[in-house]
Image (cartoon, rainbow, N blue to C red; front, side, top):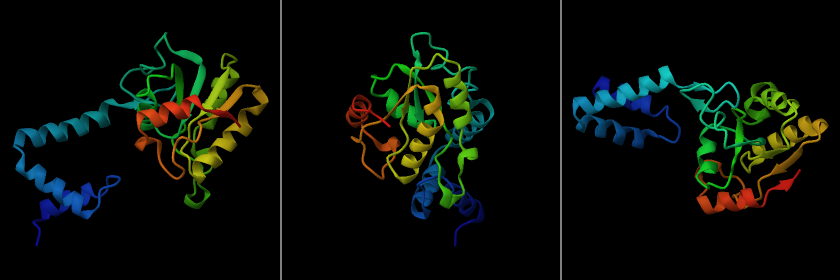
Length: 197
């Protein structure tokens, strides 16, 4: 029998992505071993993120400043937009230090089986940026899986009328994988070998 407060914590931890019952239980017992101050610091950090972090109005990246640090960096090439599914994909590409453009976060990928259609991702925001006229290339960096490929083709179709160069990351990335797990060398090669679609 697990005490109700501990069972509640384990239950809440299982709601995190990639955390099953055993992992949640280990995390909960680890938190119990920490001091009250450390537990409060963790709780405070979670609340602070929820209160202070929001989506950049330009690119949808998670930020605490408006616009985000990438969109407001004058050294970035705003004429090249790299399109990713989720904000955490930006870190993987940034780790290569090879990409000098800006980003656009779609907030997901097309997945008819899960009920995610074109209106559920932010292609409209991307089109508005492309319509501005200063964009010369859109790099589509969606995940190399069925949903990512469908999303890439949909985006390419939507921006084709604007005659902007549209490229896709090269397949140095494993098919069926997520950008989040790609190492720096693989990501750098994928950026290097992007192709027209």
